[in-house]
Length: 151
Image (cartoon, rainbow, N blue to C red; front, side, top):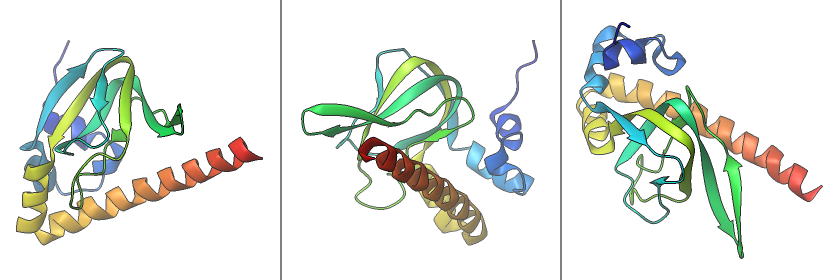
């Protein structure tokens, strides 16, 4: 079985598909492989948002507490990103992410990525543009879910 470098894995992902190879190498320097066991939390609301993740295998549940109930608002799985609270200060998680099925992920050091975005504005522009697209898609999905829930 051939193992792939983080740069090779990222190059094959849609998020990075038209990025310059040097930008993929640039962000790869902020990444490592991480694993999370089922039932554990990848992210806890209120904690510092110091990483974000590209899920390679497994599934998670993005959860929020409403009253006395915990609701799943999104269920990211392979190929999806988790965790955008790191982008802007105060860089604290705003929700919990529970591991539903063991997860293997590429973990990105948020401070490292922020510094690289500031050091190379072209790189930063491409990263933030892509992140904004994901945030908009998630907001629309949450909106549809809320409409269904209250209809």
